[in-house]
Image (cartoon, rainbow, N blue to C red; front, side, top):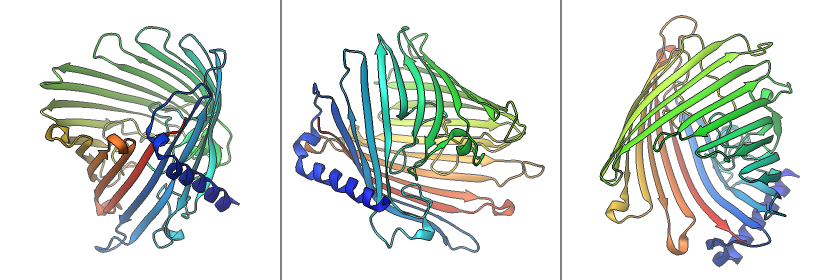
Length: 413
């Protein structure tokens, strides 16, 4: 049944793309609502050493999929509805071995699936909007984590408002999450590692720009009888972006167990500071983070928000001190419009002894991205490379990762 649903979804997606290329390239507004979609073809492999010099622990997938979404216009300027179907399927048996799954492109054993990932009712008054049930969320600790075939989505109930000038605030109860590699929605506590439990997360946040070029973020996540996580971020941008520009970024998180402490008693924190300079198409960044010695930061519901979260390592283990270096270039200055490249590196040092002893680790990333324009607008190619260098004395294993993604965003109505 699962494979039949996937095949039907992909047939419809391909039929639409090949039958209506002109519509797919246009961005239109219709009184009947909007139909948007995305097609992806994605290759992913992670290869680690087990013993010796061979990278013989392999995860590998090649998949095709995407989504189709319909959203109604605002009815009576107050109400609406949206729904999206997501699907992913293996493209090659050779590159999708059942025992080499776990890439996040497909299921854990490299099978495909289709799912109603979004289905929400919405209502608004002025600049305040309410959304109920299945939806995408984009916040620091609960987000779509959309770096594989399909995103994480949530069964959530809440409001978001920008009625106050320079301030956007949100208030949500998040009940369940669908991970990237499954069609199943599970409780937030289950996703946090408390198998078979039923618990959600109360989420509140504010994005505020009190003065120009000083955006601030304050987000809190309260999971009853599990923990409370508070995240803050401040960025300051100055200089002349057409000449020489500067950025200073601070990030901090405090996390501690609450209530019945079903995952144990803990309290920890992380802080990070990064500075950047931009000129002549180049951007250079340097930063550092430090995590409390008592415990690492738990991150169960999305992409980790810190700037040094790389392709494989988040550098958020107990006692971990990390140095981040980055460099990027926008090739549009050389006439290659839409082509960007960056290098990101992280160097993590952890305690060598004690309860939180773990291996030191470094990671090196190369990211290449090209977005087409003109008649191919909406099409992009992303190529990412990672090498992980881990200290073997305390159980670390070297590895490398390769990602190649072709993506086409389109609007049919």
